[in-house]
Structures are given as C-alpha cells and as structure tokens.
Image (cartoon, rainbow, N blue to C red):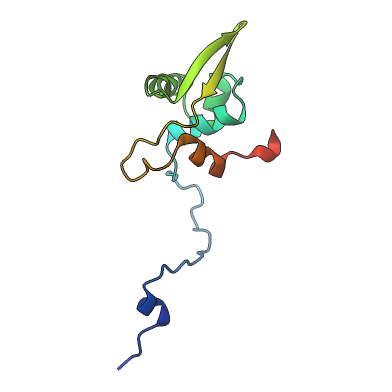
Length: 118
C-alpha cells in the first residue's frame, strides 16, 4: 500500500510551474477584451480609442462598443476635454460574474495595471 502524500492529506493546492508551451502565440488570454480596455484606460485615461485598439489588438469599433458597454454598466464615464475624451473609472464598481462579485474594478486593476511606466 502506498502512503498518501502530505499534500493530498492536507488537501492543499499544489502550484506547479510549467515550461513555456512550444506554441507561444496562444489565441486566448485569461482576461477579456473588456478588461484589456479597462487596463489601458486606467493606465492612461486620455489616450485615444485608436491607441487602445492597437494595444489590445482589436478594431477601434470594437473598443467603442466595449467603452459603451462599460459606460452603460456604470464602470466608467466619458467626458470631453477640448477635442479629446477623458475616461474616469468607477473603481468601486463590482465585477459582474457571481464568482467575482466580491471584488471591485479597483481590486482587479490593482493587480494588473503597470504603474511603473506611468
């Protein structure tokens, strides 16, 4: 009979690192395009949607739809400054999925926005 491992006995989660897959051009990511747009606007609220589209890798029209979704959900507000838009994020807005509703937009962005470059 094999002795049970200490990990199995304690029912703790085992974290393993994996080598980078051979196909490093994976077509999926852990975060949605909505999150990618939020990350971009959190990093620079004055950038153009064309710039956001280039960074996210989607069309400018897709970014416009995402911004409209986020505005309708109360996650951001769009304001004009001269000829440019400026985006204000509501960091206290809750994430929408039941598994994530205990977290706010601010909690999520704190994990992924790179403040070193801004």
